[in-house]
Length: 426
Length: 174
Image (cartoon, rainbow over all chains, first blue to last red; front, side):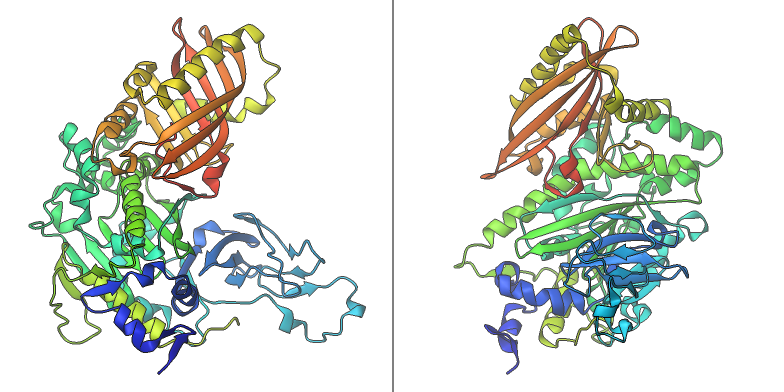
């Protein structure tokens, strides 16, 4: 029997994640959370940032990967690096700002100095220091790869190539990027940061949950009804032709496009300052571009930390077993007329103000409910049996009321937790 | 857009303003404190009535910034302010039902004359929110542009530095 850690065995984890139900402990047990930070987050490809955020040599941005402080940098050769944000001397975090431009990262404690590619370039009073091979004291490095400008990194010692890991998810990924003129997509300056008192998997459960829109987002849909606008969330989940997909590696897709034949822009209420921008686009013969102001209507979730929702990138940062931070980044369309990004700014606020608060409330209510030891199980059986078709790797298609995406990502989660991949810094 | 530039200019120029006018500051304090009381009491319809037709409420994520170049928590015109009040009255707006109970502490009110017989005022603000058995306190400052004899709100900019670190459900921030 393989021990997951001192108190949780392989067989016990199989018991906690079953095909039709999962146990409350995977949301409430701090020791399971600690194991997840390595076996799930460090061992998977995680989204770190977008290349457009660091256009020039020396540009950098900080974030976390499974609670580890990391740096995304562009070095003087133009290459993108993802490094552990930790001085190799005493462990001091080197960069504490959200981002910036630096030719060197100088540790404020004892002056060790690193280049943006992670190389140790200077130690004060080097004659006193016995280490001859300075390369052994470079910053810890993560395996890094990009897809369409999106930078992913992993500490997995032998990771699957990024393209393979994305697999079938590339179809939705490409659809999201390719709708932008010239295939150009960028990320705007700074994210909204929201926290909730709940486990990170609650946001994951929600991301491909087509049923909650009818109930949790009733108030958002009511605002639409007040001005005769049928929001994208107001469709009957039992009869809409929207499709949910559960992909290999825990990735998930909700394709809303079949349910909105009149196009995305028709689902939006009037946002502030809409009229002058809309008029400019219509007068220039660009009315067909208005759909770009709202989301692609393809919600793509890349396990374990990136959700594409609307024009946002929603990055999930676990903080503690019952605390999660959400980074909400807004994407822009550099190849489109300026009015599109101006509209995106106001469209972006709409759901964040009238939809997201309801999601956050549900997450916190669930976490409180899961505190009851005598009620152990969370039901995940809607839509069973799953039709896995050609094999375990095949995509499962279903109505948006199916919980197949949740079952599929949790099965992948259980696999990562019980068959741990070795992790290491390069 | 001119209105966006106006907002960015008002925010960006605040720190270099001279010492305030004492009489205007007293008049502004009454208006700003009244608004805080309306919000704490949940009198949102009365609060909505105090805005001009060309009103903007802006809560940027940082300062200085420009509303056309970076995300904000919100930038409402009069239409969306009205929607916000409608949303808060919806029983299914779970993020505010039950509603936050807030206590606003307004301080350091300064005011200066503005074009068209208006007033520009800056004040510090501490908002304590109590909801679902927990509370959080957020501090910042607010800039108001008040116009006409009734000192109607034409512009309000609310700057809360903690928005840059992650806060729980901020839908009580107005």
